[in-house]
Length: 143
Length: 143
DNA sequence: ATCAGGAATTAGAATAATTCCAAATTTTCA
DNA sequence: TGAAAATTTGGAATTATTCTAATTCCTGAT
Image (cartoon, rainbow over all chains, first blue to last red; front, side, top):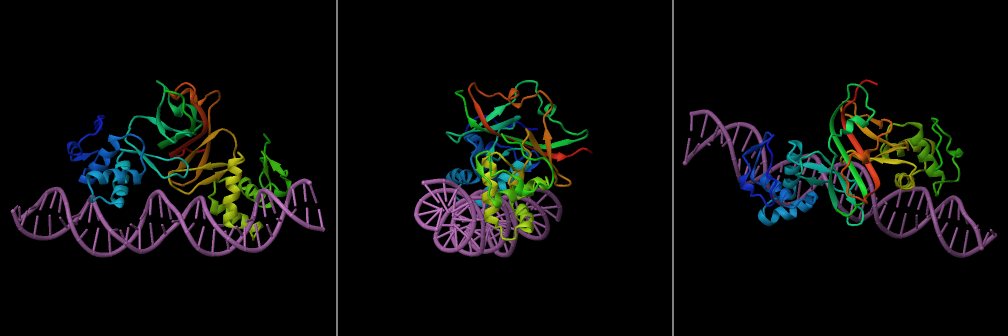
C-alpha cells in the first residue's frame, strides 16, 4: 500500500500514474490533491468548488465519479453523519469522526494504543468485518 | 425512563398517553407498535406500508413526522448505512448495527460486559458525547 | 507517429428520500 | 362548549446523488 504524501498542498502532478490499482487521471489527481490540501472533510460540492479553481472545466459529475473511485480503492474515506451529505477524508489511518455540535466541524479521532474495537463487540463466531464506521456528535473539548 | 413492552405485537392502545415527554397520538402509537412488532429495521416507507394495514388513512408524511418525534424523544433509534435510506430500530439498549452483505439483513450487536467505547477513543479532555453511531458491514457468522 | 478500442469526462436529465407547506382535523383544557 | 394549539394530511418542493448518452482522452499495438 502506497503511503500518500502527508504534506499540505501536494502537487497533483507528483502522484504516480496508478495507486492501489486505480489509474490516476488528471481529474482524480486534482480531486485527491484538493482533499489533501485542506483536511476539513468537505462535501462533494465543496470539493467541486475548490477543484474548479485550478481546473475550471471539471464537472460535478466527475467529482462524484472521482470520489467514488478513490473511496472504492481505499485512497479516501467517505464520512457520513445521519442524512447529511457525505464528506470525504484522505486520512487513511484507523480513526473515527466527531462532529462538534457548536461549530459543525468534524474532527478525526484516533484509537488509544493497543485497543481493538472488535474485542468489545458481541459478534458471532466467524463474522467478518469488511467495513466499519463510527460517528460521534457532541461538544468537543479544548484540544 | 419508561421501559417499553418488549413483547411482540403490542397493542397500540396499551401505550400510556405520554412517553418521555412525547404525547402519544393514535398515529405515533401505530408507528411505534409497527416497529416493535417486527424488529427488522424497516425504512420509513416500510413502516408506512405496514402501518397502513391497520390504519389505512395514515400518510407517509405522518410516518416521517412520527418517526422523527419518536427518535428525538429517544423512543426509537435511527439507523444509517452510508447513504441508504434511514432505518428505524426500537431497541433502546446500547448496541450497534451490522449489515450482512449477502442477505442485506441488519443485526443488533451488543457490547461485551464492562467495556466502554469511550475508553478506546483519543478524545480531548472535556469532550461530551451526545450521540454515537457505529455501523459495520461484512459477512455475519452463523447465529 | 497513427489508429482503434476502451476508459473517463461531461452536461444535463432523472431519481428518490426527505422536507416543506398550507389546509383540514383533532386534541386540549379553560 | 369553544378557542387555541398541536397534529395529520396530500401534494408540491427540495436536494444530494446517480444515470445517460455523447464527447474526449488514453493506451498500446502496428
